[in-house]
Amino acid sequence: MRTAIGMAVVAALAAIGTQAAVAQTPIPSEPANAVNLVDGLEGVFGTHAGFRRSGARGVCAAGEFVGNKAASAISKASAFSGKPVPVTLRFSVGGGNPNAPENGKGVRGLAAQFDLPNGEQWLMANISAPFFTAATPDAFLAFLEARKPDPATKKPDPAKIAAAAAKYPDFKPQMEWVAKTGVPASYAAVNYWSTNAFKFTNAAGKTQFAKWMFVPVTGQEFIPDDKLATYAKVFLEDELKGRVAQIPVEFDMVLQLAQPGDPTDNATVAWPDDRKKVVAGRLKVTAVTDKSTCDGINFNPLVLPTGIEGSDDPLLAARAGSYAVSQARRLAK
Image (cartoon, rainbow, N blue to C red; front, side):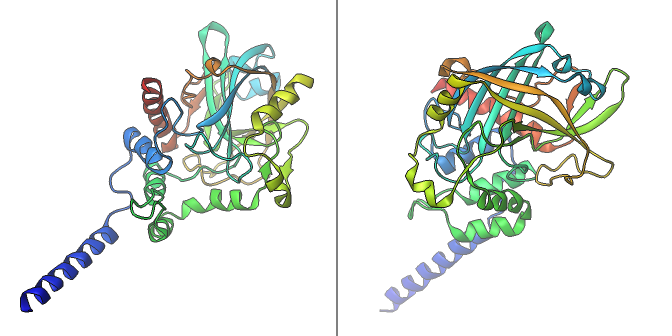
């Protein structure tokens, strides 16, 4: 009897110790890097051979961008010459699930590769929220680790999510935005933001930090909550094809100019709405194209033309590195 009781006590103490160890596990468990950020995405969404680890469900498109010469006062980038440049595009549903329902809440993505004169390129990956998920790579890793499903329940542990949110309040802006914003009725009818800041330099050497957004010329369209169930789980690609077949889809690219004191290193903080805005050009989407046209592009946000540089936002380097790791895994299949 004593032996049985003793063993039970030892087992109970061991269980308590294990729970305590889990509770004391740092969030995140290690400093973020390109590899563990992609591991984190796979931990949340699973590994889907041949698909991107973020924005897994998507569609390629083609178009052109005509810059506004007024923007050349802000940057000497050739994108703002006033001459049309070809653009390869990819619209997507946020997250790493290639079977994600398109009638559900969450961010949408607009990635682009501008093929500029003299072999220059400008790559970008924008989302339909003015805030990124987290302010730093470590915070983003914590966000992912907290949402990894428990092996026993197959669901995320609410306690871990709460602990991560308490440590990183910068999760809140995007989560609140998504919760209050409707589900886009079309890839063509929602705003897309850079979220990160970039440094623009004009021909005279003057610098200006700015963020950008792509604003649909025909306005935004959201599905009423009481109509969501009437939409198919997959409709965005066909909807975009139908639109483009009738008339090109157009977005104005709008630069928001920073003032002194506006943070350039935190993509979870939106600058005040009264900051000066400049229409930098118009993006025209002319066709939905085959997967092969954009599948090999990783949309590294630090591939930039002369006249535009990355800011001090640590997420930019983290995104560039993790996009490369994701692409290598995806193409290796």
